[in-house]
Length: 135
Length: 276
Image (cartoon, rainbow over all chains, first blue to last red; front, side, top):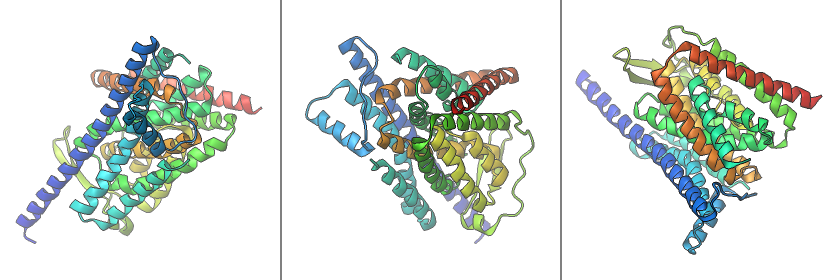
C-alpha cells in the first residue's frame, strides 16, 4: 500500500469513527433528555392534580419490558396518568445504554464488518436483554 | 421521605460527586441512609441515577472522540457479569456487611484519588499478542498539547478479569466505581488518562443498567423515589461540572475529598456497630 492509500484509509477510518461517535453521543443525549422530560411532565401533572409533588406507587417483581408494555397498554387505552409518564421516563433512562450497545452492534456488524467485535457486542446485548427479562 | 428532601439531597450528592470526581452515588447512599432509608433501597435507587449521570457525561465525551469504543465493548463483557453477580450478592447480604463494604470501598477509592499520581503517561512499549488481537489501539487529538496522541492498550488478559471485580463492586454498592475502573485502565492496560476516564464513563452506564435490572426484578426500586433522585443528581452534577470549569482550585477539591473521607469512616463505623 502506498503512503497515499494509507492516508486515504486513515481518513476513511477517521470518518467512520466520527459517525459512530456522533451517533452514540446523540443516542445517549436524547435518551437522557427524553427521560428527564417524561419524568418532569409526570411530576408536574401529578402536582397540578393533587397539589403535591411526587408520585406514590411501588412496583414489585416486574421486568423492564413488562413495565413498559403495561404502561404503554394503559396509555393506548386512554388511561394516561401522571405515574405512567414517570414510569416511561425511568424506562427510557434504562433503555438509553441498551440503545447505545445496539447502535454499537450495528456499527461493528454493518459498517466495520468487524466480526470479532460484533460478537463481543452481541454478547453484551444478549446479557443485557436477559437481565431486562429477569423477574 | 418527602419529595423535596430527596431532591435537595440528590442535588448536593450530584454536585459533590462531580466536584470531587468520585460520582454521585458515594455521597447519595450515605446521605439517604442517614435520613433513615434502608441501605438496599438506597443502593438500588443510586444505581438508576448512575445510568443518568454516566450517559449524560458520556454523550459529551464521546463526541470529543476520545472514548475508545473497542476497549469499552471488550471490558463491558466483564463488568456486566460482575454487576449482575454483585447485585445478587447485595440482595442476600445483611445490612452491616453492606455498610462495611461501602465504607471500605469509599476509603480505598478516596486514597486512590488523594494519592493521584501526577506522573507522565508512558506509552505501552510492547503490546502482547492478545491485546493486539483485540485491536486495542487508537488515537485522539489532545487540545492542550495540540497534537495527535497514538496509543496501544496492553495486558487485556488481566484487565478483563479485574473489570469483572470492578463491575461486582459497582453492582453490589450501587455506584459507578469509576475510580477503580480508571485505575485498571491506567495501571494495567497503559491507556492515556483522558482515554481511560472517558471510556470508563461509557462502561459505567451499561454496567449500571445490568445492576438496575436485577434490582428492578427483585422489587427494590421504587419509581416514586427514583424520580426526584434522578432529577436532583443530574442537576447537581451539571452544576458541579459548570463550577468545576471555573474553579480548578486544589483547596476546594481538598474540601470535598474531606467530606468523602468523613462519609467513608461513618459508613464503616455504622457497619461495624451493626455487626457487633
